Length: 102
Image (cartoon, rainbow, N blue to C red; front, side, top):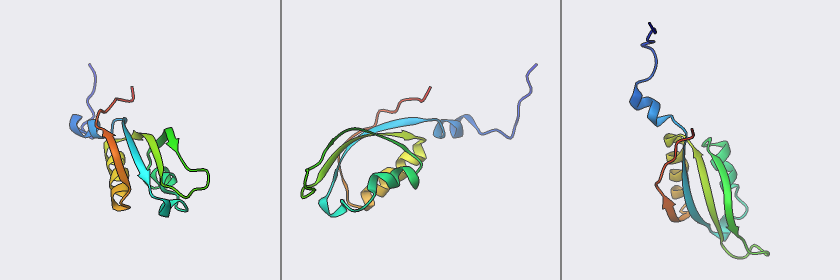
């Protein structure tokens, strides 16, 4: 017989903390070229960021466009998206399709 540990999280809580991913396309205004916007997604919000595609001007006078894959838990990804919204970074498109990390 298997023992059940009652101190573990409920099934609902475990689902929130399960790895997932979101694909987004964002526009980084030229005013943020000196700011570590993508780096902060990793260091402050704990998401893994894969830059699937990017369009940057060679002289950095124009806005930058990024196609990003964010990986983390639902709360981490939501916090990262909130951070981008607070910066007024335009999220051009967002895939709400979540994929399990297993």
